[in-house]
Every structure is written in structure tokens, then in C-alpha cells.
Length: 633
Image (cartoon, rainbow, N blue to C red; front, side, top):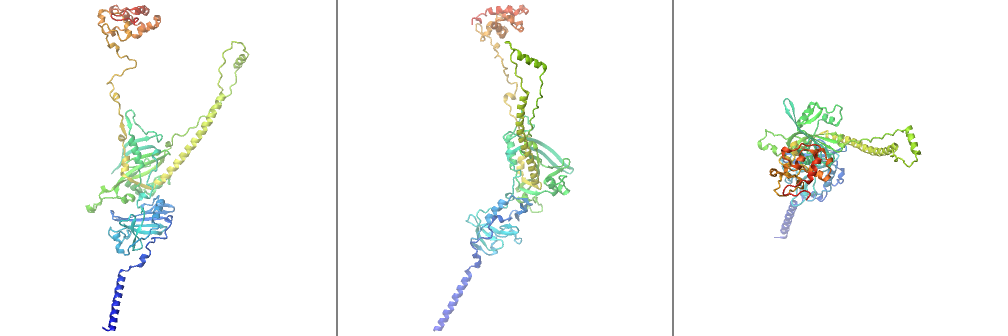
């Protein structure tokens, strides 16, 4: 092989190697070097101020419903509202700032793919893309606005395995996607996270009155059938005072304090889970914008009826098909809570509407199981001012009357002159000083002035509370006027209490429960000593029994009590020794009989002189056989 051939061969091999090298380089080189240029850079470097965001939209695919749910909050004319939820007022400024802050500085970490075909595998399909079919592979699209201009618009996909806060992320207008550390990713699409869900906004300690009015309204072809149930009024003077139930029979009944506490707790747990718009005519009337009050058209009436509420033409009031509960606070605000229709639905159905109904046209496996859906109930809230809740209005003190000047009479002048000229030693006792009406008046006037100052302060505070309470009522009515609220059904069930549940029978002690089973001892009643018959020769336990007269042999066998003298009749003359001055009742016939113990046939007739005649023998009467006299004792 000559040199020329060898050179040609080497040249060919070199060309082949270059070709192979070029092919290898072409195969394994990065497809788009520009895609790697921004690795480590923020997705939206121009977004630096979280307060510049004036709106948020979150689109998330609902796998259960098979549709995309869109939640948004915007600042319109200085007011935060939720367009996706009937423009309901949002308490969103702070939360929006937190959400915006979490989007600042989010960096592209590692490039994963640049093709659109990989989006489904990483859950990065746009949930708002109408060309996308199927329920799988969709991500969450988060958009922050300043006015109408988007500040941030990203789609968040699956979480990166093995990393706590890393996700697959792409800009909504790009196909390539990266991993990104989102930190504490706190984007909330829950309606209740963006509103003030506490309906009443009251402290339990401020509640002074609760009224439970249990009635029902049944709709019949002929009209409405009103069924009145229990009506219960509970009130208390202060937060530490006990609750008092109106009409409670305290001799037989007692209040179940635990049930009252449970009712208070249920009222405190009363929270918004959804909202609906009220008809404009009804809203205007509730706000007080119209002189005629609530003016409802036929469509308004149907809208009310659909939610479980009706207008009572006779009273001009709105009534509810499941009764009312009223709550009064110490500032004079009385909340009237009317409970309407119950319904079931998904979370979105409860929040914004589209009441769930069973569709009989769908196959059984596709029909929603209503038992698995959350149960909720419509709530109609009104507010009134109840001045009695402020306590008793201060009453002014009574101003004392100035005494009239009294002129001294001629007689009084003569007496005064005589008293001054009377220098004898035998002077009458010094006259008692008469009160000075003028001094008494001045003291009473000073007390009145002090009480008047206190009264004016109390009245000023009371009137200020009246004004403040009325302003609060007007503010709340304007807040509640536009909305039907949706509450959880179980909270309503906790307030659906009857009087039988609120009251229990009082437990009566056994001795009171069965009167007559025991014989109570009366004060001063002796322990029946007359039932004890002393044995022959035995000394009686009561020393007064020794004053009995000796009895005959026949009488000795009789019970001692038949011949026993009345202790107070015999003992009194012996102690006082004033027989002549004894009261007439001591001359009763039985006294001489007990002293002399004559037979029944020989009992003398009682006379007025009987006591003095029988007293001396009574002192010397011999004791019965076997007994010592009282004097010997």
C-alpha cells in the first residue's frame, strides 16, 4: 500500500470519527440551552411587594364533582369581596398578603421536562384549559393580580418525592417545568378561610336573654299550617348570676343548668358555611331603605319559600318553618335567628348553591348517595334593639322642699318670757331642743345635690349605651340584610330543645315525699311520762309526782296518770306561796280532787274560795305508801 492510499484511508477514518462524534454530540447535547439559563432564577422576579396584589384566583379540579372549582377574592372600590361566592364580603386583606408573600422569590430549581406531553404525568395540566379531557393530571392554577394585570400565574403539580416542600411547578404560559421549593405552601381555596364566619360575634358572658320559640309551619295545598310548640324565656341579670326560666315552679321543678350551657355553646358555634343572595326588595326593606318596609314580589315570595321562610301579612314579619331562637346581649342587641329548610350537598353546593338533588335519569352507580352528603340548613338573621337589656334606667333623686318660715305665736312668746324670768330653784326640766327645719333642709339639699351629680353621670352613660346599641343594631341589619346564611345542620339540632329537656322534676326528701308516716314532736311536748307506771314502792322519776294525795286500795291499781296533779297547778302555789292571788283558772274542779283524792261521788263542787282552802293541806299532804314527800326530798 503506497503512501497515497494510506493517506486516503486515514482521511476517511478521520471523517467517519468526526461524523460519529458529531452524531453523538447531536444526540446527547441539551435540546435547548436557553431552558437552563434561568435555573436558579425566580419565576417572577418583578413581583417583590405582597401589598401590591389586589386580587387572587385559585382554580382547582374537583375529582368528586368532575369539574373545576374556581375561587377568587378581589378588592373592589376599597372593599374585599369574593366574586365566586356572590360577591360576599371577604376578610381577606391579611390572608391575601400571606398568600402573596409565599409566592415572592419562588425559584426554578431543576429543569425536569420541556415538552407538553409530560404535563399529565406530573399533574401539571391547566385546570382552566377547556381542551383538556379526562379527570387526571390537572394541577392547581394560582394567579395574583394587581388590578387586571397578573403578577404571578403558576400551575402547581405533584409533590417531589423525598422532599418536604418541593413541588413540580411551571409558569402558566410555559411548557417546560421545574422543581421549586414553595416552603409552607398555604394557598387556601376554602370559602370559610377568607371570611369572618362567626355570625353573632358575641361573648357568652354578655348574653342576658335567650328565647326559644319552637313552632313549625307545614305547607299544605290550602295554605300554611302554623303549629305552636314550646316557648321558653331564659334571662339573668349578670354574667355570674344564675339563669332563670320564666314560669318555672321552683317547688316541683329545677332548671337543667348543663342544657342551658349547651344551648349557649351551640350559639357560640354558629358559623357560616355558605351564603345566598336575598331578593333586592327584601334586602332594601330590612336595611330600612324603604318606608313601606319589606316589599316582596311574587318571585321574592317564591325565593323565600324555597329557603323555608314566609311573610306573615298580619304582623308584617318574616317567619321560619322551623321556629326561632332569640339572643339578647347586655348592649341592647337582640338577635332573631329564624331556621329554614334543610338540604344536602357537596362543599361547593353548600357554599354557593346548586342544591343537590337525586337524578333518576342517571344509572344507579352514578347517582349521588345523599346520605354521604353534608347536611345544612338556611338561616335568616334579623336584629332588634331591646332597651330592657341595658338594665333599669336611672331615676332622678327627689329634691327636698324648702321649709316655710314659722312666726312665733303670742302664747309661745309669753311662755318664753316666763321661762327667762323664772329664777326659782324649782325649775322644770330643760325642754327638749326642737329640730331646726332649716338645718335639716340644708343637709337634705346637700345630699340631693350629691345624688343628682351621680344620677346625671349614670343617665349620661345610659343614654350613650342606648345610642350605641341602636347604631350597632342598624349596622348589623345592614350586614345581614343581603344574605341567607347556610349553617351546619348539627348546630341547629343542638339548639332544638324542648321544655321537658330543659327542666327536670325536683328531688323531694323522703320525709317530705311521704307525709304522715312519722309523728313529728311539737315544741314543749313531754316525752309521754304519763305512760310510765311506777312499780309499787318505786320512787317516781318526776319529783312533782310526789305531791299526789294518797289513793285508796282500788285507786292504787289505776294508772298513775289518772291521779297525777297538773305540775303547773300544784307547784306554782308552793313556790310563790300566794294562794289568794292565783289566777281563776287554777280553781278548776280537778285541783281539789287531785289534792284530797275523794271518790268520784264525793267530789265537791268548785267554789271561788277553793284554792286557799286546799293549798295548806297540799303542802302537808302525806305521800303515798312507799314514797317520800317532796319536802323530805
